Image (tube, rainbow, N blue to C red; front, side):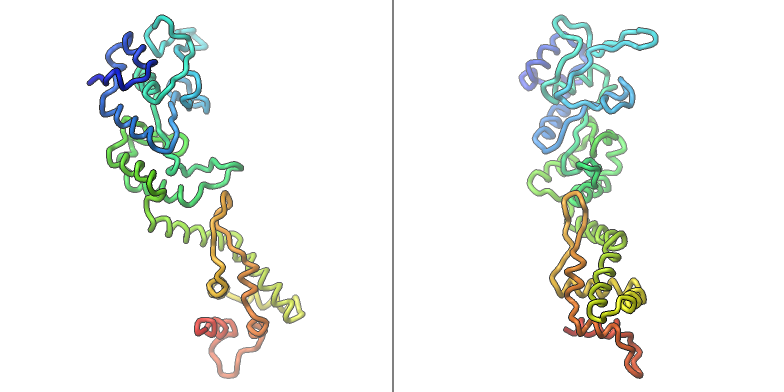
Length: 305
């Protein structure tokens, strides 16, 4: 393996190189990859789970202390992650991703250096456990679809989409770097995801909220709560959604993404777009000889308008 230039390393790494065995050296290609990722928005993780067990503390940031050696709690056998080095404490801090890579090399890559790009992080790691934004989720699934084969090796299975730096391809690097100038990988996928989330929100709560708002307005116009409830319950899901869509477009009230809460729309404001005359028409009996229901007649008139 080729050895990197000492001038490219931190003072800590340079001091260690003088005492390290050859397998601790980093290739110029790996160093270049680390330098390019360091210029991107994200965070470095050193995955020590293979050394310390599958515990949350085994996923360490660069600001934490790193074990120089460990002993088996049963046998007491001592394992050193570095060769014995004069002046190196039992615990030390790594000052850069290059230092962390040297640490991983010293463990013969049982510890792994991972990079988690911020705009690919679709984990539910927001305060309160809310879902990530549609932008993050779209970027994540676009990236995973585009690099499904590469991720068989590169996916570090840690926080966010954590990538093992040894297996990040040039094409993956270019996509990650592109997010520094524009925060979205695919406009089409993001639009598609927003529609999916709006449909989920309609099913989860918006259909219920709109029905209640519509029923409230009908009750006020008809002065009959039971009749208003009966009319709204008689509407098919498709008719109710068609009315909701037509009214939201007419009122210029649109879905919007709220931080941590997903897609939201003001259902009461949408229901307010119906005039009293239009509300009354929903309670009218079908016209003699007409094949259309009052709802169908109302929707047809709204389309013409």
